[in-house]
Each structure stands twice: as structure tokens, then as C-alpha cells.
Image 1 (spheres, one colour):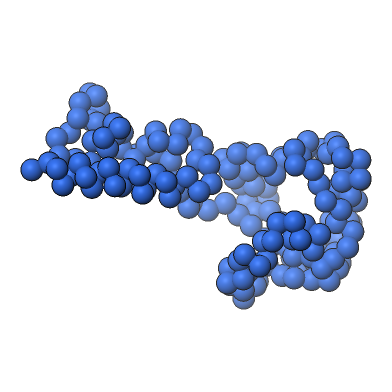
Image 2 (image 1 turned 180 degrees about the horizontal axis):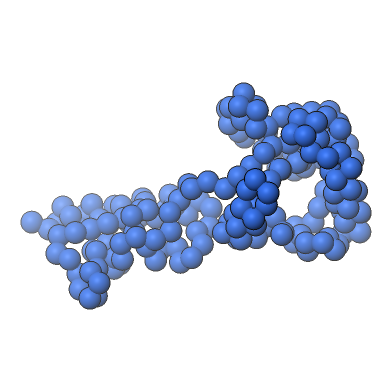
Length: 180
């Protein structure tokens, strides 16, 4: 599965794995591009304290942290390094290009999908009025945010929930205040 797939595709693929989890591995070269470690120090400290993420110096150490078969991890890294060098991911067609993983330090994290945003709920119109099952407005009932459905379709883009709650929350508040 390509890592840049939709969230639902990634989640379903992870849930199909033995144990319903996966591992995320990156090195300093990737972090120099993404800046993930500096952006999330508190989260990383928490994950480390719970034994879910580690910074290590070698791939051998990374494999040992989660009892991953070293030969399997090394074969995966060899493939990634080949794809990074050729610019063509022959296994998963990674769209953004891959980075060579031959040099550490490394971060490795055990990951599983979790609910962090719901997709569905009450149907509303553009004025945030709740619509009943017969397509009629329910007088005096307004809704915004995760209790509503249809705003994002079947897959929310990261960060859009803030716009949703602020924009539609403001409209719902104005509508409710104007309704006497």
C-alpha cells in the first residue's frame, strides 16, 4: 500500500495486518525534510514513555525494539534504497519519491489506526439547519462539526475539520441567535 493513500485505505490495510498494527521507520535524512521530530516533541516523549516509539542508531537496534525479524527489515530497507536511487518505487508506486535509509539515526514507531474524526451524522443545509429523513428542515435545530455529515464527503482532508467547526459553528450560532 502506498503511504500517501487516503486515510481509510491506509487504516484498512493496517487493520488487515497481523495484530492490526504497522511500524513507521524514518531516518535523519527524512526528518531533515519533514521536521517531524522538532514539531512534536511532547507527543514523541509520550510515545517513547509508553514503549511505542524509539530513536535508535542502527537498523539492528530498530528491529530489536519491536522484535521485528532483522532480515525482513533489512530487505525492506534495501528495496526502499533501490527505489530511492532509481526514482521508481516498483512495489507501491510512491508518488512523492523515496529517501535513502542507509544512514541513521532512526526513529521507529508502532502505529495503529484510531478514531480522531467521525465522518457522518446529521444532514444539514447551508444554513446549518438539520434536515429530517423526509428532507424537511427541523425548526430551531442547528448543527455543525462532527455531529454533521456530508460536509467532507467520504474522506476528510487533514486540517479541514478546523474550517468546518469554525465556519459552520459560527453560522449555526448566528442562526440560533436569530431564531426567536
